[in-house]
Amino acid sequence: MAESDLIVKTFVLRRVFPVCAVLIVLYIFKKNSKRINGVVSAYILNRAVPSLNNATKSQKQKLFSELGDQQRTLGRDLKILEIGAGSGANFEFYPPNSTVTCLDPNQYFQGYLEENSEKHGLNVNFLKGYAEKMDAVENDTFDAVTCTLVLCSVRDVKKSLDEVRRVLKPGGKFYFLEHVAAEKSTVTKFFQRCLNPVWRRILGGCQIIKETGKDVESAGFTRTRITPFSGNFPFVFVVRPLCMGIATK
Image (cartoon, rainbow, N blue to C red; front, side):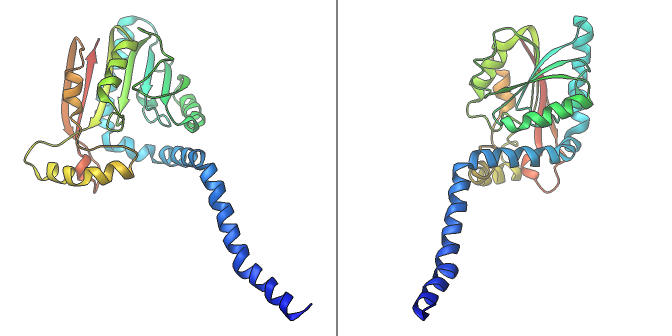
């Protein structure tokens, strides 16, 4: 092999090939970024479920205990819609044999939902979609709608709550638990305002300055009960102000 050919070959192997390889990897990632992001997000959230539940477990137990009361009053198994179901963090709090329709924009949660539903004796259906536009769901369908730590990320809370009322049966109940804006003139509120733009961009639209409790109160439910509390989120004080409640159609 001529010396000039050897130089060219060495240049290609050491310079051109690595650059081409990187470009190919970036192209593949770009073409599949949504799928990769969905798969990774589903895996991470499923692994984080125990920690997330521990932070608000006692409050969730109290809130969702009323699902059992509702089931006994109706005398049958419940039809529940969970908005932003993720991998099924709330399944352990639902009455066994309930039929749960899980609404989430990430289709890669479906496998985890089916796996976790078997552990808790639930019948699960998956519905890909968003809270603001549940066109696939008919009016007056569900006995209960549940939602935990999700309304912070929806684009339009009012539209989401309108949809909740629409799909609930008359007398049906909306169970919710959300982190909210702190009281005015507090240190926490100051930091929430400062951090919200960055927080929103990094965490997929999640906002820490929403007043979700007030939004529910003005959403047109016949009766609303809301309880504020402080969550046990270590090192993340800006999301410790929370509220939970039940709104009846």
